Length: 491
Image 1 (cartoon, rainbow, N blue to C red):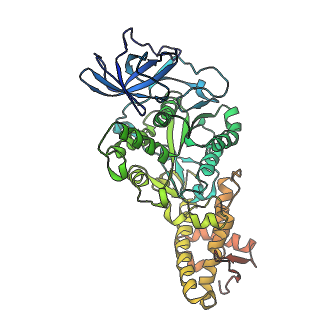
Image 2: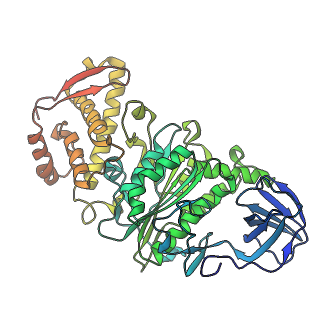
Image 3: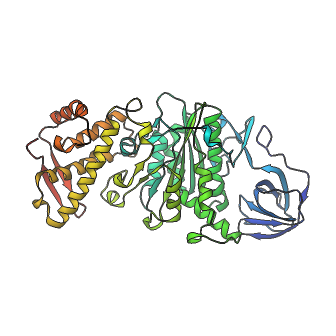
């Protein structure tokens, strides 16, 4: 590419196109062509398409056509190789722009141009140059901020079953996320979206885009499947420059990575590769790692790249290859619950299945609030006990439960309805979120809060109990049961 972002292609054109197969083009009698080289394809009608060299064998090159091969014919098609891998312009001119999955503007503006360019494959990062993530990204979503805190430089996926509001959650996080007073922006990569979903994403993120804090790449379901493979790489290339050259903290939201993996599987099948698990290519793990591992912090540089990939699990199966391999690479997961979704809770976070492995580095004293880590641990432990109480109640009936077990049912109900449940456009402060945790714990006897230090209980618990004296909670059962549970005596 030149300074304006245009690729400098060679003067030699090859016209011996022998085969068009799915998104692939095969050309013979080539020389000096390398793997991953950028390609320009001129059709007989004057149309220009672009591609990438996937394989070179002697004088034969296999080219992946980004726009697909539909409508193409071997006759009259000319192929020109750039002599370098695919590069794109990088810089702050991307901020505020809306593009398709190939990086072409769809907002009515001119093509993005810049003085710098970078390969979409990214640069390998020496592990010894990585800095440990240790500061939070606050999303405004209580369930994430309180119990699975996202840390700058972390890769934290969202696992969802089909039909759950994973896209709404991803969009909400992209619209609300902040890092305090530091320079911050969001790069959103949508893959395989329906047109109504793409429109809703644009509408929800319009304010952030207008503020120059967003780069939006939208690949729709009817776009060429090969474009879906390019979209997250474009997003990460733009994000890396904004983070490590410009000095911003960048959150990259990628939804849906399952659509990306299915596109990878389709291209692999077109190439005739030997399939692995469930027909995905055997290199799926390394391919996903090549994306996820581009996030992080670099020692001595102020910016960071944080990745929030969203995955839909076919059939809700968390052992499916895409979430399974993602779990090996990333640092935790946020899991959505079909049961909570059916009960009308948004976002339906399954707290006991979710985890942020870097939370202790980015939350607590000096980072969020002094009580944060102990409060989160106590809330999760109490929810585990509440689940046991619910299972026992299903066996013997709630009338057979003793007082403390009743309190745990009230506690779980308050967590679901008062802490987790919020509007899709509601951005809660961290103080509000943590106070809601205390209000839920206040329905339990103090003796049950064994994971909390006495000074924290003296500071927060006693005051919260005093403000909520006389509370009666209503426990809603998914089977339709509704019962009023009084707080037990003898605190």
